[in-house]
Length: 215
Image 1 (tube, rainbow, N blue to C red):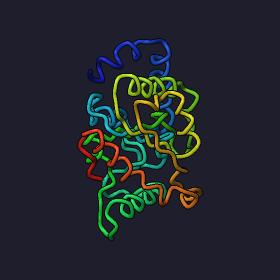
Image 2 (image 1 turned 180 degrees about the horizontal axis):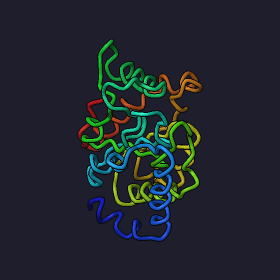
Image 3 (image 1 turned 180 degrees about the vertical axis):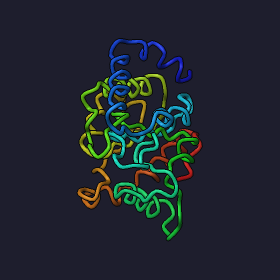
Image 4 (image 1 turned 90 degrees about the vertical axis):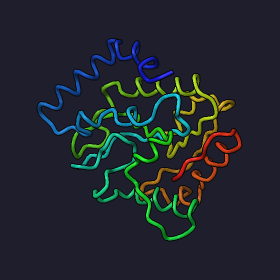
């Protein structure tokens, strides 16, 4: 099964047409991130039938040059927002246990089957949460349900209460759900650091004879 099979009927529904029109109208009067070319990057880089891990974000970064269509990630050469710095730190501590340099643009992860999905796919410049009323959540909740129903042995990383609210759409008997506080500067020290989600994911994948992720 590929994304076209999963999404064709859904994107033809009235609510999705309204989302697309609303975003188009907002782009006329505001800077909206990510740009249209990057809106579906997560879907382009991670094939549906190759998904191994889902990392769920809320909405894209709101500053110029940051949002690249992959939840939490930014392109090379862009300063890392605090959440991404903390994710990088946890990966290094958990996986490498040494002072190493790792890329955090997300592309190498997405191509291995890490689906980096924001619950809301667009945002106005400088206004976090500004597109949460457009209907994106209905679309991405549908995607989470489809992954849960159509795939087996996927690791879902749910960071923070918002992401954890999506547990209702995931069959825990078929998949691994990992929960931790959000990696933001406000909460990373309350349990995100030391959660070891990245090694736990690889252990689970290996147990099910699935190639682990090179984080």
